[in-house]
Length: 118
Length: 159
Image (cartoon, rainbow over all chains, first blue to last red; front, side, top):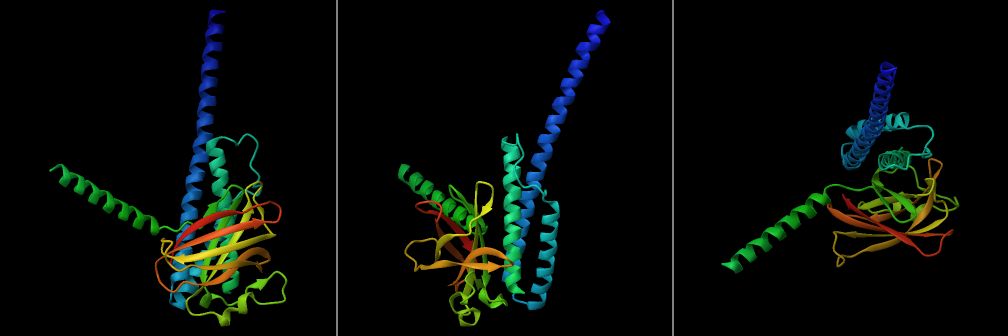
């Protein structure tokens, strides 16, 4: 009986630890994705500025192709459902959602501008 | 002695302020938000445009078309979304003011950003002369038919 109680207590502790680990892994994953999206957004904007300021037409053509590839990557990395999931009101989840939205809207803006440059 | 230290402190403060302003100017922010809207900015030299910007009513070129633009002309375009649900705003009246530098004393150019279709999506744009390399301030005011009043955002753009 004593042994059973101990196992139960230990089991609960282990379960608690596992839950805590899982929760921090989810939080870390959301944070990591936000950092990735922030970096990608900065790269996209900086690359775009380089493309627009490039005076050599051949180099610009290469930059346009590279930019298209970046935008395909952005699109591929975005979740198909952009609606904020329930329970994502936490700061990290909300931040991740905002970053994804900004990335998606910026990529779309660049697509429109490239369309005009074709 | 005390006066000297005060002068030195003031000099250091001014130097730091100038550096901070310069450092900030080097990074463009292409998206801003107001209370209700998310606004994304795109600026392209008119000389790089091949396709005429198409107005939504399709009966007229946007401000005389690309050929009528000066070599310094830049096409300034924004896309606007409602924060609530990230829904594109299709029926706003948008006014932009572009001024060189960050001082209010410089000459500003104010124009409506016309509703246009690009790649099947609605944006708002117009041509502005931005002859010099350097900092520009772009103020965008949004009048949405669905809401009373207006909201504005400001972009610091470095050409």
